[in-house]
Length: 397
Image (cartoon, rainbow, N blue to C red):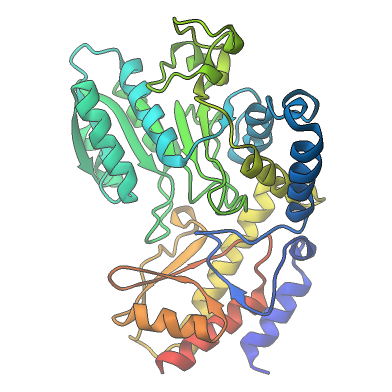
């Protein structure tokens, strides 16, 4: 057994989160793609079966009240809240990330209040959909879009800035951006900050309340393990909720949803972030998936500590097993700048990833030359990390 394999054994033996792995459906594959789709928690199939067979099959329409379907968006939002550093009553679950980004950006422009504020600053390195939506929101609100890198944001803010849409973690490189400093800069300019948390929620501390974030959105199928297409969520800071003017008002966000009134009156609080009928099957699967966070010792702090240890160890193993110059890490070395993934630049990345998957190491490929490996600390161990780097070294040697 190699020195690194022995080190992995020792690290796994000392891992306080090692027991959580048994709460997921896993096999002998090294699964490092949880930053795209989290693994299945063992509690989910039984819960979904109950929702389908008993709640839907037997109770039918009664389940809106008796099974708590109607309150699920806020109830599940309150369960996500501590994972992103938010108090209860500020998160509503439902719709896709894209729809929630649209709601948040348009509402942010409306909150900015005109007065010449006609510019939306957007992360130029963002996942493409965020940019598309920001452009559409700009056309709808009479604004222009100004794409810049997160590092350039403070230098372009001014009297024209209405809203700023940023990613907490870069989806390609895994770079963690400085949410506290950038939020403070946006506020100093009199603008509204909107954060996309898709690649950070469930992997590292976010601190929405602590840092005064205005609006935030995120998905639940990555590090929160909610399942394919599981609903996203929208955070609206409590003191801004009365000013949140959604561009998608629906009967579910009406102050009197069953009044069927022709005139819209928004519900109080985070409920005004709802639109239409909740997607109950996927929403309650997500609720079951969140049960893993109830185990002793599972905290965002513990997850972050293990995440950094896993990514550090992976980089150490890559340096040992992969021939020098064959791959290049584009993920920051500094812990303060690293999310929970490692991205390696490799000229033949698409072919390499296909062969890795054939060998039982699942990551993903991002055009044109990036091998992307996501580390979900709840179920990834150090032996997984050592094996992945060793197989990568064998393939590219």
